[in-house]
Length: 201
Image (cartoon, rainbow, N blue to C red; front, side, top):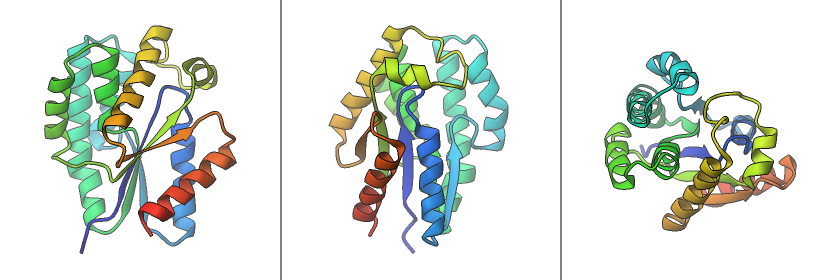
């Protein structure tokens, strides 16, 4: 039995990933699709303890990276892979691309190093579809409502994040779907539903 689809949501702080991921899961469930909604950091038992540290404790860039990778490794092995193998779709609010973009493009760590470490942390698992919600940084930050130390970063940091996502999407267009975050929530959901029907008939 082939594994179920794995869909991830990415974007800058305040882009609307969490809301859209939740609405996608509600729609899939309504279609009778078995689906699991999860998130990073915090999707595993270990991650529940790491999430407050990652989001709120002052951390060196490498310490931040290693905590995120530890969270991802446990999340992948204990939550995502077992669900996929059982035929359950998995929708994750952030995954490996977040680390590549935030710690690589944002913090300035080696992209090659982050890619290599991500490959280990993910056990080689790649999303079948990565939904990137793109909109101007100023618009996104005005909506952000989960105060954490990433939101408190400079505008320049967030600009590097947006640029990083768009560059990664250009590298892997077959995996990424870019949605206009300035459209209405209904329009964004309808566009996403069309993409899902096309990719996973």
